[in-house]
Length: 460
Length: 157
View 1 (cartoon, rainbow over the protein chains, first blue to last red):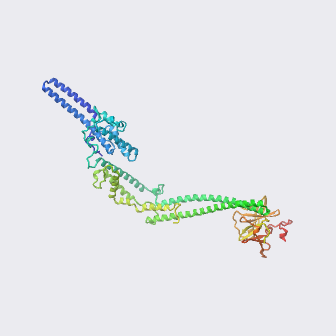
View 2: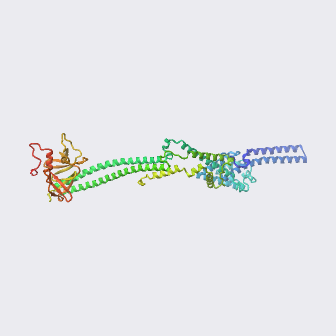
View 3: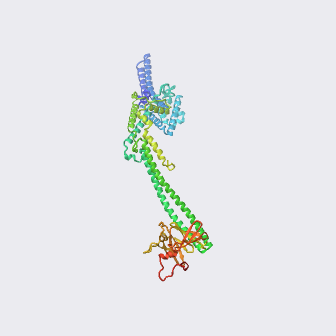
């Protein structure tokens, strides 16, 4: 897609460096010719011929040099306009750009793309713009930017400005960027590069490329989606990707996970019960010891023995209470684990039944039944839009894509979305409203799965 | 009436509670691992080690015809009289009831039961049967001819 720039930037031009020797040759040849004429002809006629020859040669030399200057100035103007407009969407620089121009041109374009996601690139792009403004301002004032502004000597435009400066035979840089060139930096040339009231073709083209890129991404995403749906097998449906699972499978997975966790908990409880049994035996031994001590104290009637026996009995009672507490808690946990397992299984069955009911079928859900044909239609529609975008002359069959003035990118995006809604096909309506079964079932399945969490009321 | 006993060890068997006076009790031990005797009869459960001595253990519930749970662990209440000892198998750790809380009641006079009951001890809420444990033991393991009877003369009389 061609840039809407001036003719001189499109057509190959003579290298400005080659124009200077041509002018010198013309001047020297003219001088020699005038000398020869002066030697051969005498009088007024001779002088007239000399003057005519010199004048014609001067005109030819100035014409050649002027064309070269205009050529270079056109490049500079084009570049500065690109900077003013925020770069170009073209992948390669326009023909006729020298190495220095190309480097800066490509760098600006790259920064323009990266500035959308990178703050650093955005700052560097702003620096480009700032330096371009300063360079233009200096040139407008008839000053050498590299001499007047020290910042430009170390900035990103340094190489370009040096290249421009070295191309000048005599005089400052401004002599290379003639103020007489309206397209360059003449009155209102850079301030408003395009006539007011007419949409900026550069911005329009840029927006067009952006929309085209977005549609390409959309087509690519739809292709991937169609591939994943079409290539789905029962094995892949049970695979590790949660996005490919049905709600019923998700419920099963949650139940299995919960069952595994509860089994681990039950194993821990069994171990705790074993330890509680050991503690109970120890307690029984302590109780026996206390009983035998009390028995001996009773038989002997010794107060001292009775005191020891009493302390032993209290210790045994304390151990007995602790052991009873452990055993009771263990039994309660075991009972609740059993209840939870039962509730999980019951809830999973209820969830599957509910999912099947939402699907309008008594059979459990096994695979996504939505979207294959709809996705195909959507893909064809997107490809059609992309085809129209790539060939702007085929817009008669489809509504034109919205184009906004530069500086309102967010608004443009909204307009694009609105336009897409206006051109909604039945497929698009399905996408917007959502296939009633699958999406709704996913939500319901998630809600049901949420009910399996520990803090949920399983009874309900 | 207070029997003058210092207390009694009480334990349940079936629906009844029995008691052993502390003067007769030698101690309580776990009986979950008894040494088995060859050719033993039903009431003899085995042998237990009590303070360095072998003590025969009899299953009182089996002797009285009372079904008792055979759960483990079980306990053996050792009865001592002089140097003689034997133990009765009981299902749980006995409770020590102080003598001051016990009163004696008349023993059941059932001709069929004979002298099985030695006495009955009562508290305000419970009733415990004291049996002639030594007679029961001798009925199970009779004294060999020429050996002095284990039963004290006072009891015999």
